[in-house]
Image 1 (cartoon, rainbow, N blue to C red):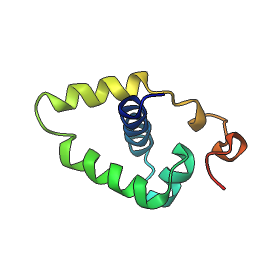
Image 2: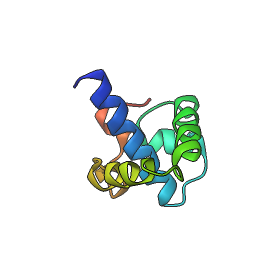
Image 3: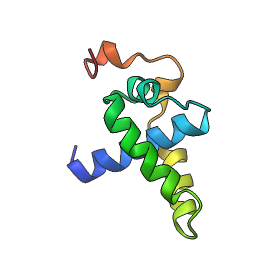
Image 4: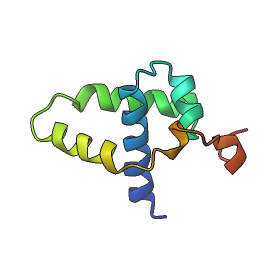
Length: 83
């Protein structure tokens, strides 16, 4: 997958986790399959842009169309994304 596409998909999954009430960067990172530190950076981006006009709609779109199966019953450790 291209790096820009991967970045956008990861941002969408992080935003989805936040919307589901997950507040810990470590937990978001675990669910998304990235480090807690990186999850924290994505979370800061989300918090900084979630209410900006024009951006809010794009974030909603990302959340709707992100691959969020891992929030249901998929463990990222089984995919080898986290140790």
